[in-house]
Amino acid sequence: MNTFFVIVLLAAMIMVVVSLVRGVIAFLRSTKIDLQSGEQQDATDMQLRQNRAMMSRVKWQALAIIIIAVMLAVAS
Image 1 (cartoon, rainbow, N blue to C red):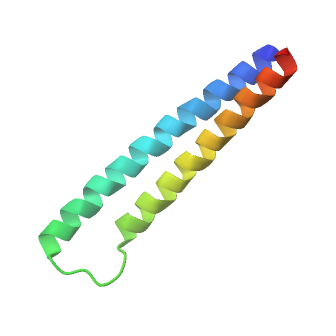
Image 2: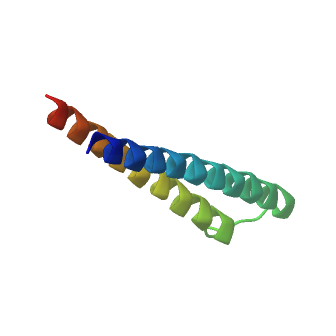
Image 3: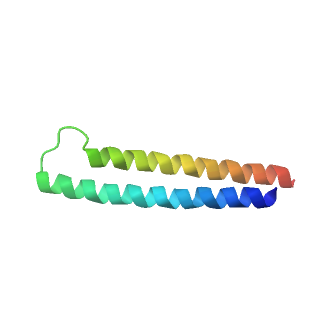
């Protein structure tokens, strides 16, 4: 059972890193677009992607914390 939790935890941790990298890339692209255009009225497509990637990261982090809490509860 503990092995299962460790595998799921590792998968969640990998997804956190993937979401973080995708969000940073979207952030860098949106900043480049904003600097080149100089005018912005609403959120751009890249900014929306950045927001979705960072929210995904938060969700994966929450899942990882929940898995750790379950592992600690089962261990004690």
